[in-house]
Length: 359
Image 1: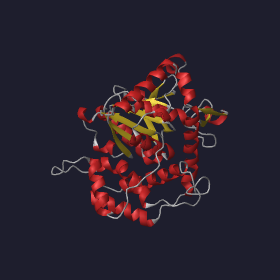
Image 2: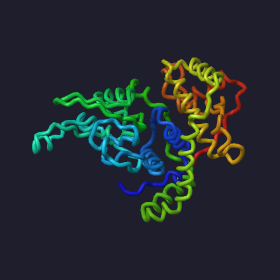
Image 3: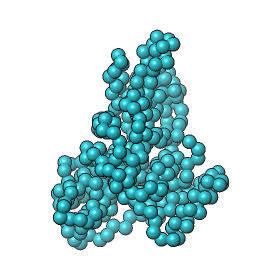
Image 4: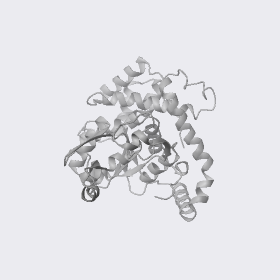
């Protein structure tokens, strides 16, 4: 796959980077949906983030990347394999992929040559504990959408076919991208994305020049370019790992949960997944921000018995709620504007949240 572009070298697109970092800190947030123009760095950002994340401890030879001590019992490697470290995977799910390629199927080569009935894992197995990236997700065929909805809800892939009965872990950060002008996403799958962002092509000359300059430098000499950003990449990777360790220590007060419920009621979101996503995203963002603050946090601030406040919840509210709004034919404003307006109406005294940017 080659060397990934450094995440910290990506110019602008702060909201997209923020959403991806939050999902990396806590994958239970539910993945990220990125809609916008082509050529705005969507797939680049996903691969860049995966490249700077800490390597995964796995059982060597296990096709499902089982972690040592959490054996799934699905293959001989789970019982006999030695611990190993592997990079976080980023798996592309092509629009034209067959169901067998996605979920796995009978290993025909072994069946024909050895007469053995064995399972050949698919893309979902390869993506376990990593990222599953779907470009043009709004054009994905319905039968694959149904598969993803089931797996996203259960965290397992179940295959019952051709005399096979296989169940394996399939927990991944789902990242989808697309252009809304080319079609809408099915509501059932849209609801499974925890966060959603809109990206646009930069409209100022300095940003466009800097993007082109950096990309050209990377393409000409990837190793030298990555060396230039190595310190920033290592620092951000360490902050993500530290934030993951802080999650269990952070407390979300009932008052913040009540604020989240009031905001969701004002926006008319369906179900309770919006509140749950707000809780998880605010907690992950708080844990992440603790690593960027200069004073009063470090190892002894928000990371140790810290509290998630209203400002943190409101800061991630546009990311968590903009794709959950019902259509209002009398309101032509964008979904992000509707969330911002609801925040002003429900919390008129709340100051605009100024959260630390990650990169």
